[in-house]
Amino acid sequence: MRKFYFHVAAKLRYFPWGRALVDHISYHYRFYENFEALYTALILALIIKSFIIEAYKIPSESMLDTLQINDRIFVSKFTYQLHDVEVGDIIVFKTENIEGLDYDSKPYYIKRVVGLPGDHLEVRNHNIFRNGELVDDPPFFVENEYYKLRRNSPNRFDVPNDKVFVFGDNSGNSWDSRAWGGVPVENIMGKAVFRYWPITRMGFINDVPPPSVRRNIANKKPSSSFSPSNAQAAESR
Image (cartoon, rainbow, N blue to C red; front, side):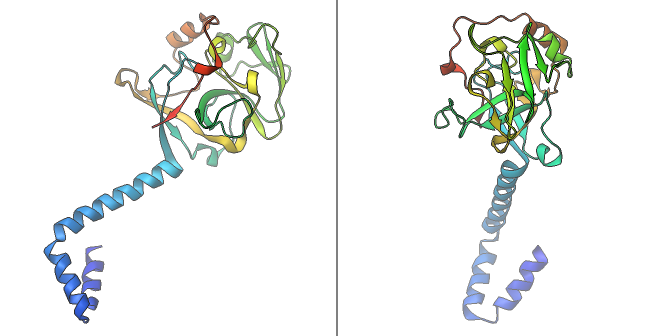
């Protein structure tokens, strides 16, 4: 870049205004070097946030104990450019155009994918059955317990062809597809891949939580205090 600047300066010196501009920049060269570094960093940050990775905060208990309240995570925005969404993925998605969700006050949710477009799902005996088969891959699905949203709520669901179904890992305390249906594929922001805070639990977010986390999840029961008003599950940082 320095050779390019010298080349431009040599051309500009043929003009009176060019000589004045070059002299001004030469006199304040430290300022312009710092400005260039800051501008470059800003552009890179915008590219990363728009196309590669974005940070989110977890403000609710719907994904306990896999993701805890106040966890900070990174979400990969390019993963699904490489391959399709898979059952077991933990995704962040926009609530825009999802009936029953308030996009203005709660623009993002984070949940685990349990059904793909065209699937038939059933919650039975605290397990998930997909197209008649027990969902056991990853094994977390059979270690966790899943519930109907309410006693008189349906336990069978057909996933529309352009949507995915998502449940919270803390099934008894999650406002999810059991209530408001599927997530349009175009609403998916990306896949949760890394927890950067707190430092004591920093690491990659795998499809299957550690054994201690899985035991805690399996022992959880529905909370009588749960309500959709506290169900928000992701905040952009």
